[in-house]
Length: 336
Image (cartoon, rainbow, N blue to C red; front, side):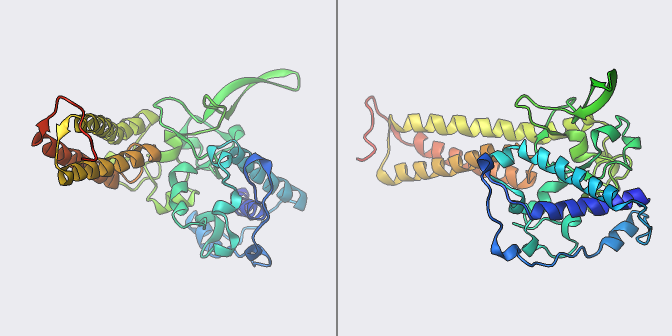
């Protein structure tokens, strides 16, 4: 219990360190904003959080100052290393993009990031609490007490079988030993697998606690159909969401391309042509939004399907106007 409490508290302290360091693309340092100077940092509500995990907040931490510092530095270094290998860092997202100490309210770093508030929701799936590779086990029943470190990898790999941890043979002290390390995708970046994103056994993860245990068979309080025992089950549910969105997206792209070609050989009056172009623009904007989001319905699924239905209606309306027009053997001048 003492070690667990220590790790949770030091994970928070590691975030404090991250808030004081700003980074930008190409390793160009960025000055911390003036608003960060002399801002008192308080971790409110930690006692209640520890009690919810069955930990006595008054438990004595039996570690030396050197051991505490080493553990805090280890947590901090792991997170920054993961972050700087990510696409987020490549595009100039630094620590202060999310961790603005002057904006924090409530239970601070364990429960919240701050700037903007929307990013509080991203970490539930994209930044799970995970074990360090040395403490990892393929048996989800055994990892509950070690899943204490907030991942900063962000990228979810939607694969039925690729996992965040891989076992490799390495040389240690002249001997070959088998141990786990973080897996890499094709571009050499770490990633979060579907099991750790959706169905992790991490009761010390605040987002799991608030999310009714998420989809884990060990912690979930959701109905039976929403509890997944392995990664293939998670993948099966994911494709049920994604496939209709992918198919609808493909339909919209094909329809707008077809309509643009038909406009070249269909005689319409100016009002009709303007209406068709307006419908095409609206449908294209939705298709661009879906493509840019990149989750294919995993993010805000209901909203995404509603927008997709609207785009389908726009191209249908445009096609109806074209069908009522007259075919032209020569190219139509859009300005006449």
